[in-house]
Length: 145
Image (tube, rainbow, N blue to C red; front, side, top):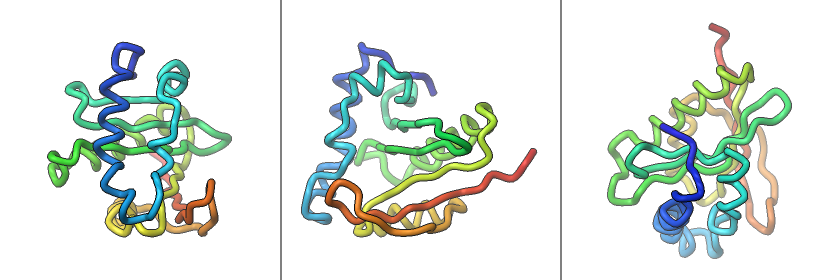
């Protein structure tokens, strides 16, 4: 894993496009990651990518928690553990930053993602509207080490 740089921006945007476009039909609108400003996120050092750009994760440190803002994996590589590896990396980053918990949100219609996050120890903490979309809010408290 490494931080994305400006030279990765086109590949990052393509990966997000490929990963999230299939969800448009499911949720009835463009998922929020398709609306993000990746130039700004890369400049802010928020985008972390796998070495071969097979997946990425956007992490935003907040007060007492690390926000997992976006996880994207190339669709043809689903089921190979890349997403789980990205989520493990997020936990390592939270610990490195001294943050005791992680949080994320996902569309209520992304049932497979919700199930994955639950299998990784995330619990639903609520539901709310975010920019016209219905979101499930989830959180994972890290065990002290």
